[in-house]
Image: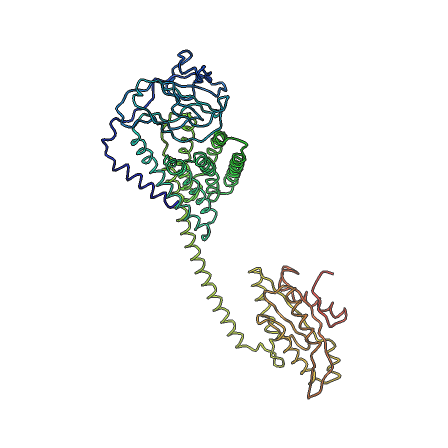
Length: 578
């Protein structure tokens, strides 16, 4: 593939340096003097078609294509007389044949495209242009063209000219330069759009643009006349052209759906999905040998003739309500869609043959979408930067607010003198604050109520000093069992509470499980004397799992604690409606 650009430039340079004097006569259009005859000629005894020497049954026609009264016929003959001219190396140029044909000059087979069987029929072989060498002294001789076609068109298509070979090669390359240039540029856009689709925020829009640019660029390269000079594989080129052509409405649908609002977006999504199904089905059947590639074009064009105007109407849906970006996308589609329809009409002979600047329309549409996408990408990045800056400012403000709150808390007596834990006063202010934050941010909040089992009896048995030692030890175990962000408070006597921001009931239960296990194995001592083991009872409640009001967690956890006491102590219970 790397040698193809070099080959193109070499051919172009070679043709440009050839002196103009080599072309003795200008190209001559063969657009008059044609006759046609429906059917296929029988063979004469010498094995040649009998109609080569039969003047009966011929009718005049302006151009050798689609004679009137076809009525399902698949064979037709055309004839004319070649004019005189001063060409040095004359060739007959045919833009295309629908579908296969033979060219006879003065009764002798001069050229054949496609394979004819014994019934004079054959398979589609592609749509190349044809350069037919003419012998010396061809002027005044009869030219017969035998055509077989099961396609919607039958005969020749495009132009028929006699010209010098060098002029034809120049024209082929010159006619291809624009398609090659635009195609290469659009393929480059496809690569860039693909990169943005992988890395940028607007993946769907850039993905649709990459698909459209790739399909349209490939189609332009596959349609360029110079393709035959690079690789003489007509069916391969036409299959590539068909696949890329059938992909265009899919890509356009994805593009429009990514930019438009809900109602038109939903309908356009259905349309491009329909085209995607046709693309896969048609190319799959062609590769399986079930149908001819040529027959997939009319069906697709009939479908496109319906869906493309629908896409156009949907793109203009409530045009005045669209944003500036959406209007630009819709306007670019309005400019490109008619060119695509015009090219389709020319291909089927519904309008006079002419060159449709589809390549320029493709380039304009791609550049418009690229411009809109990049502008939208830039605006999105600016919005993200603004949001990031706002978030950073909010974090800074929040940090400052928390710092002030910490300073305020440090200035007040919020600690329990015995255990070093926070006291009830701190808890009474902390819970409303954390509840409001959890409700505002919709983040979980868990609360655990803890009570030392039979503590009054313990004090009566061992004394209050031993009881204080146990309270201090339990406070230390509580600090070790919970996270740094959890707040452990002593409510008074043997009651404790833990506020766990961001924690679910399951998280709290796991912490409590480790705490209970640690307390069971802990050896409490006072004045070098080992005390009897103690146990804890715990109740757990969490927001929003157990209610919509975080302030109610104290009441719910207290009920769960009561259930733990009732069920035998030395356990934890989570609030439920049972």
